[in-house]
Image (cartoon, rainbow, N blue to C red; front, top):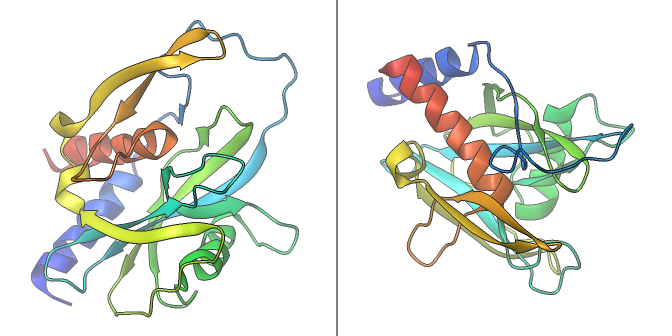
Length: 205
């Protein structure tokens, strides 16, 4: 492993090892009234950082426009924790294999971010992992329209995050975005990435 990769690994481990609160889709909308007694379903997503292209790059997916939920949005590979999954990390690795063809033994998990609560009722654990070998990308038919990557440095810079808003269920909802080229990264994906960026900035100064 190169010196730069070793330093990135150390920085990520230090940032992820720090105590901190989780995040949610409601962080920028404190007036949101949530149902009493709601039960969150556990889920895991993979935050895969590839080291194979010279500079670290974050692998993301664009969901199919034919999907019922979140069509066309930028997302991490991942999904709900199934009965056969050991934990959220196992769920994230399984889903990444199913959605983009990433072999489950290839990512080296560095750690996890605190859980993120979504408006759809999931408690999502973002699992950060490094990928040091090439793999054959295989988008899941009907689920994933595109697999692409962005420079990790782009999403680790807090100045690149923008707060925007739109009307949702009769109210104005604010959310984070971190656009890159033709890719409009927003919502829960951007919020979780901003959490990683904030941790890295505090940890590395």
